[in-house]
Image (cartoon, rainbow, N blue to C red; front, side):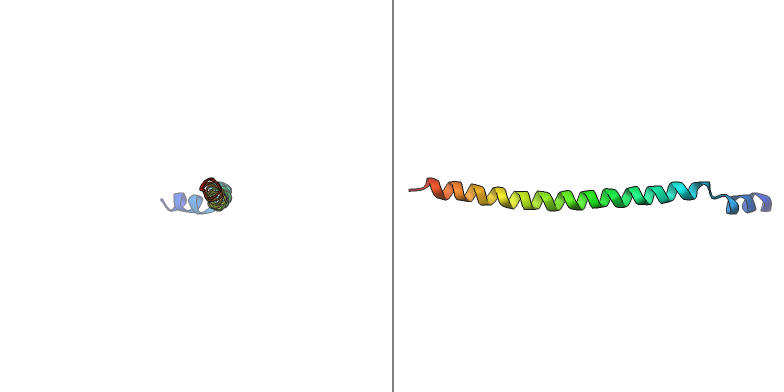
Length: 59
């Protein structure tokens, strides 16, 4: 049992996978935040355009 614990503590094969997973997670988070900000800005522009069209159409 002690030999198994020693082998497990020296095994570093999963460390690279965890690092890559963290990097991929941070990239995904950045994409989500960027897309959210872009969507909010685009929605505001479309609303301003809709307001302008509505205002221009009323006599």
